[in-house]
Length: 198
Image (spheres, rainbow, N blue to C red):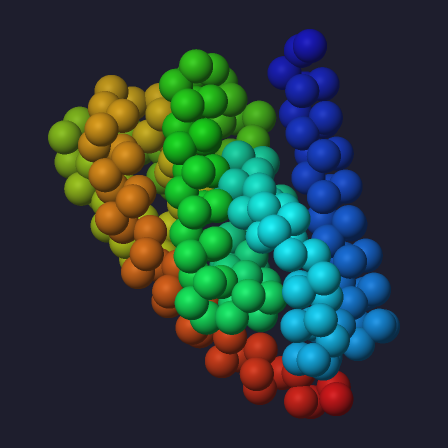
């Protein structure tokens, strides 16, 4: 497959994933699942273990194939499973996805970046990889504080000489704060938005 064809296929997958998420959101709103805490709790309890596994898998995949902003998934986790378990499932899924993205980039190299991400993002953050040892510090700071596109940086890290041990340590130690911050901020925003449509 040539690069333009691969990029078109990946864009189609992203658009399809986005449309599927929109359809699920519309269904959830129409059935009251997204506006009623009782119906949402009932849906989650009926899914049981399968619901948890599907959510963790979704969070992992959305890092590897960026379709939606990661913060949105964090909000969904907290809404579906509550603040504690939502945080845990978000953390597990995002960390797994981050490790997978690093592995994919390590095997495929820099050409993959141009298939998955915009030229603007690559130009803005791609230079970090040229910073040598400083890249690890920049990467750790960006993972700890949600100030840059984590998905891209995970792929970018895979194209550098960063070791698996250092990368894994940064992800496992840096992600909790960013996930908690996303979860808390978006949950507060959600609690203010939903009553407006109730």
